[in-house]
Length: 75
View 1 (cartoon, rainbow, N blue to C red):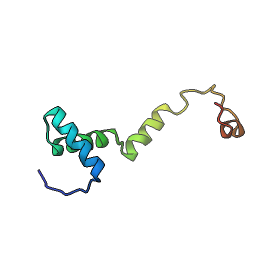
View 2: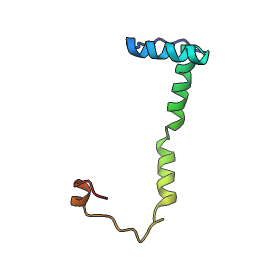
View 3: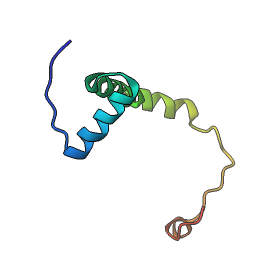
View 4: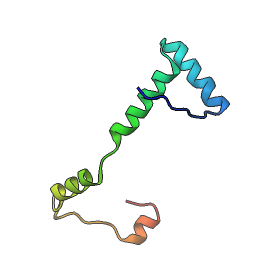
């Protein structure tokens, strides 16, 4: 494991400490879990390109609203 240092504001530290106490875990463990969650949601550009290629043309009959309609917040 590699050691690193981060800065938290007082509110972040207070809330993290409260969560750590409530769950019986360390602040470090909670931070590692949060980082793992963030990184697991990321996709590489090649994964996104593959997904676009696989779904291209999947809805050939779809009708999209005009740009003005999107700008008004409809659709």
